[in-house]
Amino acid sequence: MAGSQADQIASHRARLAQLESDLDIAGQRNRYEELQQQAAEPGLWEDPDHARVVTTELSRVETQLKRYDALVERLDDLEVLDELAVEEDDEGSAGEVASGLRWVDAELDRIEVATLLSGEHDASDAIVSVHAGEGGVDAMDWAQMLQRMYLRWAEDHGYETIVYDQSYGEEAGLKSTTFEVRGPDAYGFLSAEHGVHRLVRISPFDSQARRQTSFALVDVVPVLPEVDDEVVVPDEDIRVDVYRSSGPGGQSVNTTDSAVRITHQPTGIVVSCQNEKSQHQNKAVALRVLKAKLAELERQKRQEELDDLRGSVQNVGFGSQIRSYVLHPYQMVKDLRSEIEIGSPEKVLDGDLDALIEAELRRRIRESDTG
Image (cartoon, rainbow, N blue to C red):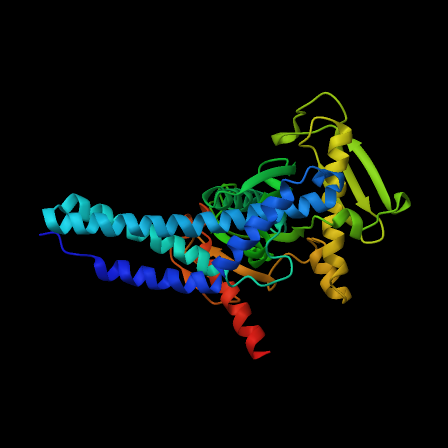
């Protein structure tokens, strides 16, 4: 006989009611109406910077309200379906209710984690750079695995991604890569990934099948709409190099020198872009990435923090990691900050990062509360 799942539905409604209060849904609906009116004004784009701020916030608020409303609607539907399942003793419908409640539970978890984000730029898009560290070709392969992991995570969360640059290793993998993740709270979530990541496995590149430890640095900075106004980059401070875009193994992917590399000489920051079709477009994107990184550095007052944020790979090795991924002799992912352990590294490498990100965000909250 199909049993009622009314208690579980009521429990989820209680969580949703708490979220309604935490997120100030009523206030967000009022704000959404205000932003819609601003976005509809004929002269909005006469001030492009203001227009971007308005449209970005409008998108964020709209997404938040849609997610909340979808949960309310789903719970209403599940309540009706549960009543029918009990009345008709329908095990199939009861199974649909159970499956629907699992989806609601996971979605509530995601939104609850988002309430932990209170940083100034947590709602922004993110620019992620991955640099291979110690470990030779294995480290380059590891950098490519990390890029795939983050792109899969972004896809699972409905985020847009744009790969700006990939520097391929001679044998395999990536020396470095830079990509943007666009969506509500992208930076807030991905900021938990900033640091050195360590991989332990049997090397697929070692003919004797020995265990290899590899390292890669993940650097995350927010994309700020006002970057162009905040950060001025004098021409004399940068060196611009153009080169031919390349693919795996060093093969050329176009016949013109359209790829652009910009070196910011005062800080040593190097950014590249080869994703766009023209040299002019690649330079514009590279400057945008550079300004985002410089804006992040400006918020850091101490020199040692500046060195960390600029994405240097010089100390990407033993003793500096934030997380270890062990594939041999046992299977485990352990975050050294939150001390969370996960026994399924293959799921993590396929983009299932939410538990790790949530644990780090909660650790930060606890640390700030006690500090």
